Structures are given as structure tokens and as C-alpha cells.
Image (tube, rainbow, N blue to C red):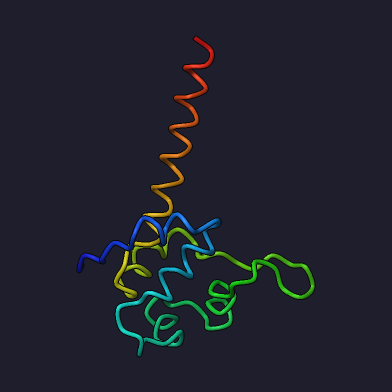
Length: 109
């Protein structure tokens, strides 16, 4: 498996949601000629489902939440697009949670 590139901290920090991170990864794919159809085939995901996952709107016009990229596809997705934006986002969120816990513990001392 090839190693994907890391995106800038600023780009990842601008992501407010997991969906934002997925879109950041897709929009920064290493080869612009890669299509959603190619990605759907690579991940063995039906095209309409992938389109929902890559839609910037988290809810459809009926107010129904759109499907997020399942965790089991993150590694293959990142391998396909050639960057680690999703992993960077998840790591950033985990570090923020850890820091919140440390701060809370220090406040209770």
C-alpha cells in the first residue's frame, strides 16, 4: 500500500465535520482525472451511495441525513485519493478530546 501525502494543518483545521474532511480528501486527490465512478468501483460502493457520501450537504431536500463514509472504507478511500485528510481530521479530533479531558482534570485538582 502506498503512503498518502499529508495536507496542511490549516486545511484540516478548517474541517468542521467528518463530511468536510472526506470532501477535503476528495477535492485534493492526487490525480484530477480520478472520477467518482472510479472510486465507487474501487471501494465496491454503489454510485448513488457514494454520491450521497460526497455531497457537501449533510441532509437532503427532505431533511433526511445523508450517509457518511463508513469507517471500514477510510483506508481504501485515502489510498485511492492519495492523501490522509480523513485520518488527519480524526487524529485532530481525538487530540482535542484528549486535551479537553486533561484540562478538565486539572480544573478539578
